[in-house]
Image (tube, rainbow over the protein chains, first blue to last red):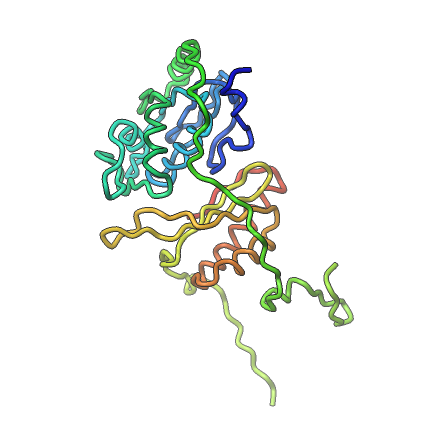
Length: 196
Length: 106
């Protein structure tokens, strides 16, 4: 086990969630799907769909940099009309964001990055290489590209990067009478009983 | 005197124009056998909602309990937004129980 493995806590992986399927966490490829139903033949680190050019992209960046084994992000399928999320993700990788948090030269309608900081974006740019298969929908071509990149075996980038931290908070007590109806039932005799 | 009770046919005349709640929006998804509800405050630039600022994440398996938690934690939503959340959380719980997919109605 090397130093990077020791600092790799699976509980901190992909904290923000999203519409994706997890695979082999030590695989170097992640696949971003645009308007396409596709299941890779290889056990990639993760694959899933991207819809929006703001929060959708933020989730992809945050989740990918939480796993330093991911070194290639393959974007495939037909870009989302109006949102242009695939091209906007590529623009984020190539250009970053401006002082207004807008992705520079992104073609999407509202490509704003608001929930992750500039360090997360820089880390994303350094950790991965974007493989552009936008407008490619042929599963043979996509699988071949995945296979080619897995064979490169680039290794782990380093320590995971936590872009967003979640903390469990103290619960508020339920004393609110608005929820009373959910705590009682009416019997067939018309009597009010406490719900068990 | 005989009491007269109005009966309301909930037909198309009750269609409400959907509008964005100025107090924010929610993203609901299923993962790890749980329902996750993300609450975002609107981010407005040039008089347009361009994204959301993530404020809280609710998680659970029960639509009723999630509804209660949201009601207690976020008190300023529009009335139709609460009703929308109730519908969506019921759908999400059904999908969770039946192991089917859930897609949020936007």
